[in-house]
Figure 1 (spheres, helix red, strand yellow):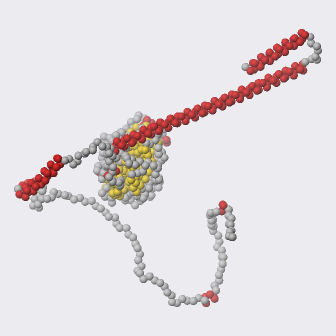
Figure 2 (spheres, rainbow, N blue to C red):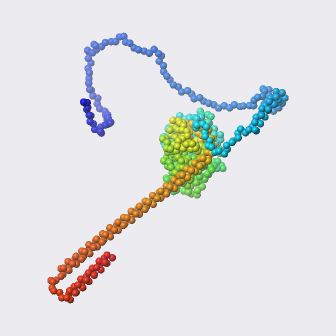
Figure 3 (cartoon, one colour):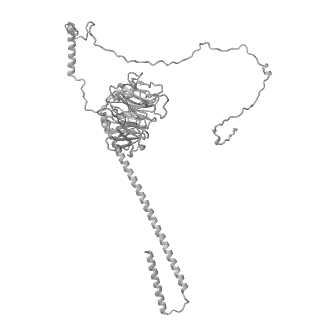
Amino acid sequence: MEIVYVYVKKRSEFGKQCNFSDRQAELNIDIMPNPELAEQFVERNPVDTGIQCSISMSEHEANSERFEMETRGVNHVEGGWPKDVNPLELEQTIRFRKKVEKDENYVNAIMQLGSIMEHCIKQNNAIDIYEEYFNDEEAVEVMEEDPSAKTINVFRDPQEIKRAATHLSWHPDGHRKLAVAYSCLDFQRAPVGMSSDSYIWDLENPNKPELALKPSSPLVTLEFNPKDSHVLLGGCYNGQIACWDTRKGSLVAELSTIEFSHRDPVYGTIWLQSKTGTECFSASTDGQVMWWDTRKMSEPTEVVILDITKKEQLENALGAISLEFESTLPTKFMVGTEQGIVISCNRKAKTSAEKIVCTFPGHHGPIYALQRNPFYPKNFLTVGDWTARIWSEDSRESSIMWTKYHMAYLTDAAWSPVRPAVFFTTKMDGTLDIWDFMFEQCDPTLSLKVCDEALFCLRVQDNGCLIACGSQLGTTTLLEVSPGLSTLQRNEKNVASSMFERETRREKILEARHREMRLKEKGKAEGRDEEQTNEELAVDLEALVSKAEEEFFDIIFAELKKKEADAIKLTPVPQQPSPEEDQAVEEGEEAAGEEGDEEVEEDLA
């Protein structure tokens, strides 16, 4: 038999925190010295000790200096001439050619090579090795190799206090330079002594930036002018708009005044297609979109308040996070807001309220990226919360296609400029996803871990081969994708167009069905309310009629009883009535009965 002891304790005392407090010291025990123990002490002599015979060594680490590269040019000149002949002197070269042409070996060599060349030319004329035999078949070209991407270069923020790379812009001529905007977007958490400089990098020299841009406030956005590659437009954290001319150096060439600038950080700046090439517009989380002319930046030329209630009140305006402008649609522009709503605007409208055309609600958080498809401007891509969505202007209630919900937050996205069905997304876990809807819609075609920190921005080169990604610590990674992802596939445009149109039709059908169901539910609810009201009225009327009848008959019977009692009291001692009196009494009773019946009928009426 087991002996068991059960400890009983209140449930409230389980896991109870210990409370310590200060108190005076207490002496628990005092052991006095004992001389007898000292006599028993035995000294150990000799003493054996083990030692290690090897040499003591220590390990140290040292960080070697970074390998610095320098670009140098080599001048190539025309070669193959003897030393005594100057190839720049026309007379010497003609004299030498004539000398060589008179040589017998030269003539023999030309004759031998001529026969071989003639044979090759005749073969090419006989058989066309490049002839296409199956032009009529429409087979989708399959990529020969698996999709891949490799890192080409890494550009690190040269400042000691690292800042996030918030925006990227490719040089419009040749794409050999990259402008990167650096800033800290954490509100009032910028470290003391943080630099506000942004840089222009040469792709061949990642060790040192080509030019430093020095704004008055850290730059959130930075864009090259597509018509003049020396001019850049920047949106500052304090709401100002700055303009640089690289030919004049690092300092700001034009700057907007504080009074007429944005009140919040400028999250979007775009150059407009104009004759002068100096017009641009900007957007901020203060709910305003402003148009500027870089020749005169003292105040904006036009302002639109993003108030979807169309009351033109800045208090009700939605904060803008992203901007989109397509040169083929010069009067339209789109704004992605903090509230997850895309606003489509018309610049040429007469009033500010009419400039807001429609809205596309669909995200649970700020829309960090907004871009139209370069091949089909009617369709556009948005990124917000944990998904990327593709929209059509014909379907306003919901998107036509979307990705699955990811575990990490999405931060930016961009279409491929060469393939209509390919787009790229970045996430907070440092991953770059490449989507190809031609082959797979549920999962990305390629998912690449670029860095350990969060990726904030993304920009694709115009040829579709190079992708630049900016991270939270200011590191800009340059990647090159495989040819299959940067080469237009056979019949891809038609397939992508039909896919977008099919999904748009499907969404329209679903929207019509949902509207019809909502109308039916609304009609049923109204019908149920009317029936319930009628039934309540009918029940109330019947109860009132029955109650009135009971009360009426009670009153009649009470009056009759009262009359009978009065008649009994007034009746004299009975005597033998004469026949005339009997007849008079009967006539009186009949008259009284008729009057009572007439009163009952009148009351009932």
